[in-house]
Image (cartoon, rainbow, N blue to C red; front, side, top):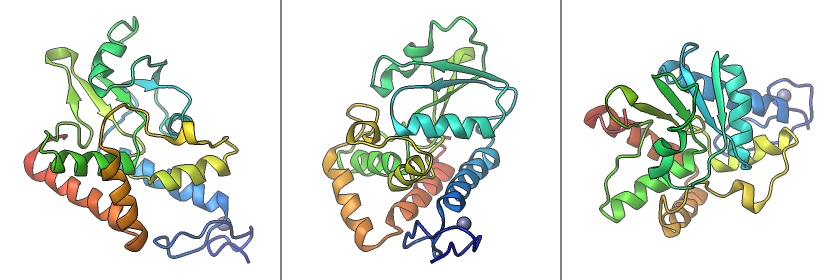
Length: 218
Ligand SMILES: [Zn+2]
């Protein structure tokens, strides 16, 4: 069977919510377009920003690197993070010499991370300060956190990585940050999403509406 979009290559990817079966090239193009639209429509990264990119061994890092190439960042600083806590993001980049503000920090964070973090925070009655693309730090040294892969499912990241020849294993597909949500929230979400396959996308939409109304994470 052929790809239902280009009608040239072999149909390789068929996800229930996509509507059409795609070849890996068309699938990667679709994901790249989604990320670009997300970043551009929200002004998350512009050409004049200083962008610090958290580079490590996960597939999210490798995919983000490819996406950043597409966004033509003029000042891109590659940083290899040492700590795996969201509270350490600001201190991680504090000592970078060529840092000029405003700074954007691209972190490994996909749609599943956002949805699980949200659910977990609601169930455990914790703050929601890390939803969206929040600002951290204070005064002139404020840092905008950019979750570049926030509109992309973990499952889609894995498919994208495989299509690009990136080796995929349990370790490099696991969430990067420690303790950002309870594993049972993520498991519950996976279970619901299997039955109702647009649950995670719907949850992201609701989180965005909440951000719009409250200003948290904006
Ligand atoms: Zn195709």
